[in-house]
Image (cartoon, rainbow, N blue to C red):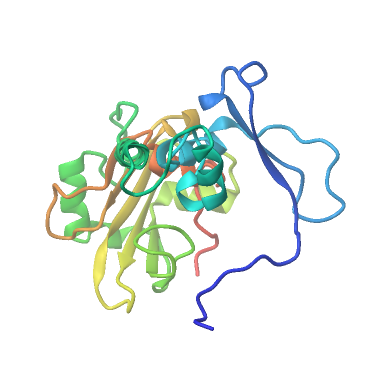
Length: 259
């Protein structure tokens, strides 16, 4: 009745996560992720996804051993059978909340050094903020004609964004390259819900010929257009960034050609 409820529809496919310390000894948390297709008939067999494509999000944000128990009452109930309750006043809940907060914070920390590269967009945090605030990115050669509803998590789902590409990224996307060149850059403007106020920017710059599972990219995001120190992420190999972008073409999710 409220218009904001969710319910299950028809089956459209099958995915599975499996924890096995012997079969997946080298995977984070010993978890592997599989898809048997999103239409019937389903595949009889499936290979595990690369760890970088699936493990980063649950590793950073799931409350319990790569599992999103905070969102599924049935999983919390099952966990409670081990003798730990999950009431909000319980020590187990407090420990889980604390651990989850710690994971969330670490998800936005750089895991690799940022090398010096020739790029139209700076990768030094202070220089980058000046570049963004002064509007230097607006002179990049390729840009979307206007803001549009976001399809990703930047700012909030559905809030307007606008993308700008440097010449290297524009040329690489035009060529349909599977791997983008060093220095290729993207800047995304993020707006408020009404689209009448700039809220911040998200930036990615390729810093290595090998993407190294996201460590070969510089990632940056801020939702503050006035304070250079109020940064969500800045550096190479930020799990909260490359975890989502890993499904893109060499970590790029931007729709091309630009509209």
